[in-house]
Length: 448
RNA sequence: GGCGCUAUCGUCUAGGGGACUAGGACGGGGCCCUCUCAAGGCCCAAACACGGGUUCGAAUCCCGUUAGCGCUACCA
Image 1 (cartoon, rainbow, N blue to C red):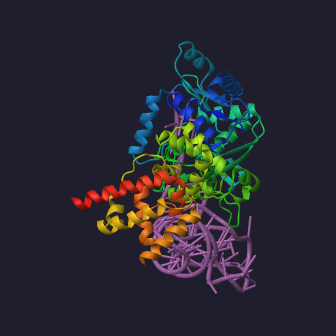
Image 2: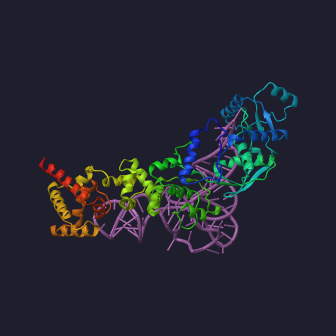
Image 3: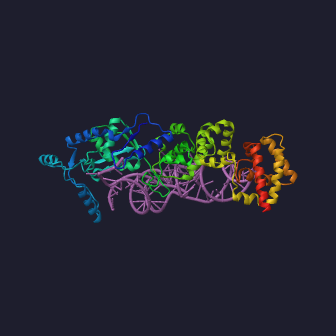
């Protein structure tokens, strides 16, 4: 994989935008094999290639001021006509051109599009044959008046220099392709293969790009998305391995990839499915791989320090394993993890309202739960389950009647992993402490 | 407007003349499991844009219409 930064438009290419590209690719785990090529660094070769076309009469200087061009275009549009560039400088007498050059009149270099009657066509890897009549292609600018090349020219010059044999890009470039093919021919070089991939659209059905709505790929990192899920999801937008394969690793996708599976239709980016995909990857991946990602998030959230997590590593891994099942993004895990780290927990008003509705009854249940738990012969899931189910039976109530109020006492929430796992993960002291606190809280409520 | 590309459930897609009462996945609905929430399992609703051809036979091939999108710059 080669990475080239196409920065010929100085107004739009900034250090920041370039860095976003690097960071996005790095995050996705897509590494390039050779040093980054900056298109701007090849300016001299671009100019030399333009010169070659100029000398061969395949391009010409156009001294029309840009303002005049803009005016004509606007006027044509106002009249409801199709604007077409008139070739009026192509046959400028040599002496006149010489004069203007000496006067340093500004000019652009335009490519002389060949034979009006001709057709420029190619066999696209995904679309099969695409053809453009030459008459529909205007003599396009290849060198700006500031002597920098236009994208269409720089790309061809660079692709030739870099020995590129397959040009794969978004299908918004289809209409650039005939121009580029003409340039390859004018430069006397072999054509690469072209493959035009469908675009990705936003929920509104419009092209998704840095100019429209979309965030940079890297932004998803901060939303708790896993790069492998992102990669998997994106790959499936416009490509299918056939059959019903969906959740795949990069290695599997690379193995399965074939151009036949490429779609021609633009795909709409569905964040819901991305989240599902992320959940799938999160559940499937080795715990050891998920751990550092979660650790970073937990530390960032201020729940614990990395050292603290390392100290009770086994416990921590088990907790992550317990929580990842019910999480779709990494942040879901962090949200659920709070009751296992914080000293104090907040009671979710809804949980209180629902599970501690009857204060006196809750108080009584929690008190006997505390007594039973305090007296438990050992602190493991099987023992605790036996003890608590026994207690419920003695009271003649179902397990849920016992577990739900307990869950609120332990986590402050209505949702958590299985209650015995919670008990074990919190440990005897913390669990009993939480129960004491809940009892205290409820007593005050009852008195007041 | 011109040129181009595209067209299967709401979304991502399988399908490449008969295997199609059109399959899977996300999302939605229901049920099961169950201490909650997830996960998991089962079930349901949901699509071949339209019109012409070609053919014994079209989701599949051809043409047109329509719609959507893209390009139409001294942007990339």
